[in-house]
Image (cartoon, rainbow, N blue to C red; front, side, top):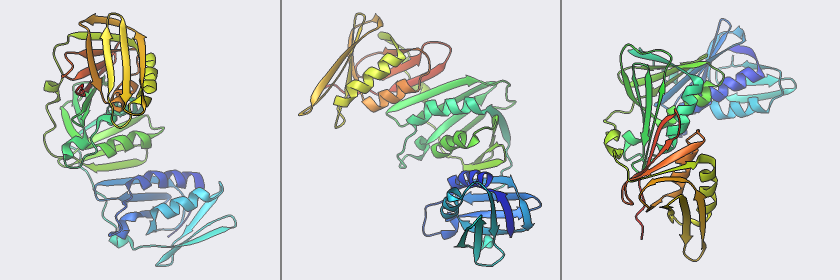
Length: 365
């Protein structure tokens, strides 16, 4: 194989494909990117056996063929080169020569016959989602995805599409995020799938300038297509928690506050919430008092003028989780709904945005 391609386009394609590289040293082939050249197309593929990515670019193909190159190394090499034409000559059986201007690199290659076959997903259901919308929704729910592999179902994002409604849900059992948006057209059949959090976070980043992302679902896989890229991930099997029953249907206290003021105050007071010390919220008439105390360090207290309804109450939360919740809201004002100090608190945006962010309280000592 021998190709000549613009350095910028090649680097972008390598960066996309690089998201599927495996760090497993026991299978060296998975740390490589399969480069296939035919006609005037160059296709790059990577996989870690759970996620598979394929991207394609145009190039001057002098000799067709395939080669597996070390993924991270070749990406670093191309990134270091000036903006000019790059030639990759892999006509030898065990190495490739990468040249650009006066620079030349020789890297060892692996056999393409050993590279796993790219999964061909025959999606039973498909839906197109505007990229901007996907970026916003994923950003708002992804913080609540669990990182604990002992409960695999919680490491994913529940995606539910019914009619023209798209809903994403994530929980780590300490907090819950539910975001709902309206699509421009309705789907013929409902879609419900749990997508690994890693995939759900990567796709919006990779979609870049693409106007929309197509989501397809098969029996055990989910596929995202955007631009010249195909991103395939396994589905997470199992029953996602019944999140609706976790959301309190009643409330005793409602606080309405400027979102930015609340966010800034939480950040300041949290400086004194060290060693997992809780952040306390005390609600009295027209005032929300934030406080945090860490033994042998100090304390912080800040009052905010707010609108309140209902009873006075004091409740405490993990400050990082509360920060994430407020940050996920984009409206100017936010409401905090509290039933009791021992029941979850719920954040909502004030306006048309349909978002629920639930937080388990920290027991007050």
